[in-house]
Image (cartoon, rainbow, N blue to C red; front, side, top):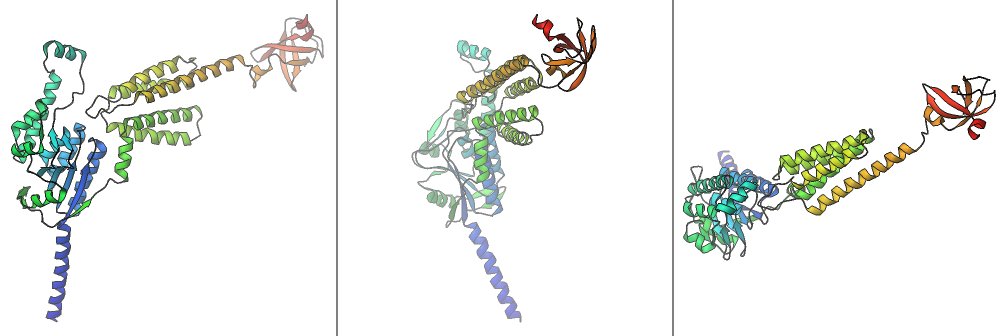
Length: 440
């Protein structure tokens, strides 16, 4: 009995050991092949977390990027620094670069490598706001503005802190930020910025297995025999990529506003209200992840309010023109200048402006026509119509018109059963005149 029990325990241990070793021989590969924005940051962050949950041996992060948004870059750096498993950042393939935000990611990684024919650097932050006074000062005195100085000092301190964590070159980090310095792969090795140069991912991981690592005060090693499993972007990342496009986010905003305008003008349709609400939610979610100008969004909200008010207030287009002008101004400054050159395309802004103008030209035309048209319903619709008197009277009496009996008033005497015409209405009393009198 004891032999049988021992046999099953050995089998169980073997299966467990095999499963653990199998998991520890796996490396997940994540790729950055575009500017670093919210979608890329979310993809990398979730990829690292999946590697942690699956207990893989390491994460291989291949990089080819011109840079990206500071907020997204810091999100990736935080995920790397918090990771209990090794993160190997590898500038690959040949001809790639890890510029600007990519340099920060390399410095933050546990292991940094580059392929032949690659480069890194140019980590100077892009100035987001430059006032006219600062521009004049730069032209006259050729000095950095206070805002630029703060941004640069903050970036230098951040990159130097990352260099300290992994014992990398702090002096060059300062040059990369302040002077926009760049290096080739071999220069980066010689100046202790990266760990080594490798021709392909397998070679990069084999060299990484020879390097002792300590993560969160725990010694960790990467196995020599590994299996690389690429993690491709899922549907969430693809959707996030779409809605964080400035043009798409802006069009969703426009669609949401127009759908709500239709809902407000004809309550009870429901479908325009639902579509408009969903469009606005998606738009605001996407804009929140972009370098959004709150002033621009406020102007768009004010302009939209004027557009909606035009439906209920007969201003003959004044509110519409004012709202369109404010809306145009907000659209132009909705996205702040940024490192990725993200902006709303001018043709789309002009197209939406023309739609607004066309919409309110039609609205004004319809309002003018409505004013000119005779009422088709109610007591006002009786003006100009003919009827018959029901009695003889000098100034007041009753008439029958369209099957209804009304009190009437006239400035002259009218005989019974005489044809009359309604000329006006006062206090629910019809002002009439004899048809013969009117003809004469």
